[in-house]
Amino acid sequence: MFKFLFPAGMATGVGSLPFIDPETALAVIKKSLPHIPHWPQLPQRGRQEHFVFQFLQVLHDTVLLIDSGDHVIFNTDASDWLEKLTRFYGYCMDAQSGDINSLKHFASPKFAAEGLYAFLSKFQQSDFTSERYLKGHIAGPLSVGLNLKNSRGRIAYYEPELREIIVHSLSLNARWQASVLSDLGRPAIIFVDEPAVGVCGSSHYITITREMILKDLNAIFSEIHAENAVAGVHACASVDWSILFEAELEIVNLDAYCFGNSLLCYASDLKNFLERGGIIAWGIVPTSQNAVEENVASLIRRLENLWEKLQCQGISREKLLMQSMITPSCGTGLLSPELCRRIYNLTAQVSDKLMNQIKNDPSLSSLTNLIPSP
Image (cartoon, rainbow, N blue to C red; front, side):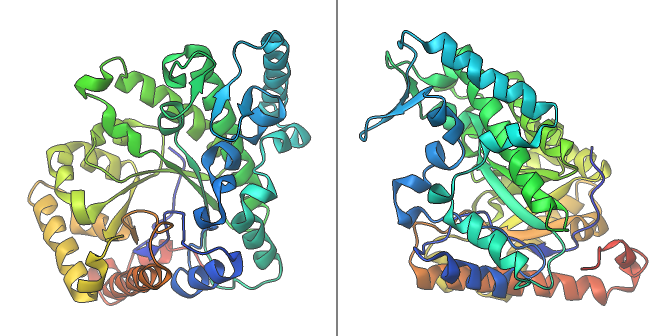
């Protein structure tokens, strides 16, 4: 596992915000997430911000994916499919060998990721000054694979060839993000947004195994680590957390507001994960109308109640505090701008509260020197 310094309650976001103008989104992020800002996904801009354009553009460029306007499919019936596949794997091999020009084939295009390019520009202008890490994100291979089909209507994830193409594309986009963010002079964190991991064990998805999920995720984490970046997963459901705690990653981000108690069945796995240096990003701020009713005190109380249950199962409070991050429970891209701002403000305030607890706790004073400086 990649060595990760203690984040000690710092906050970041999951990804999406409900703005069309990237400058507006960046202002919200800069104000609320000074230590771990992320680039904003902007789904309100239109379908170009969908994952098939944002993270899989290389498949459009090689014409492995075709867009009819109504749907996007793998063009597996094309007479020159193998020629296009050969070209794609040529890019993959060169990018994996460290060739930067080949890695650029997997970049997110500006038209589909305005928030990312605005973020890079703002940072280069020194508009961010307190950041300690920079966060990016991609869609997960299972979530992508279950939402794409081939020319004959078969779900892509169930086709080994297409599943492999998806994993390679996402892995190298994640590596590209890690590269461009790390070039800005701060350690990069890349989250894989994979809510579909919850299908594992479901009778409707009996052929999807934990081994498949782990293999695909670890392939992505390997490319992230190749750039000396930190890998994480966001899952906003009640899932088999042992899968993610077993994976080769540093951060697990969950919807702790709605599904925090789902961790209790996996307390021993969580304890082992923390012992290895893993981080839990607690999505304790709800991304729903509940955020209007909650306040900092009520959210801290909810988090403390969960932590008390985990302490009863042998997990130390010191690790829960020092190896913690705070996030909203999910993205905010489909909410109102007003609700989004409240959620980001609450996230910042909960984080500040925890960071002050750590600062003022004598028992943790010897560990605060492990927190990285800007």
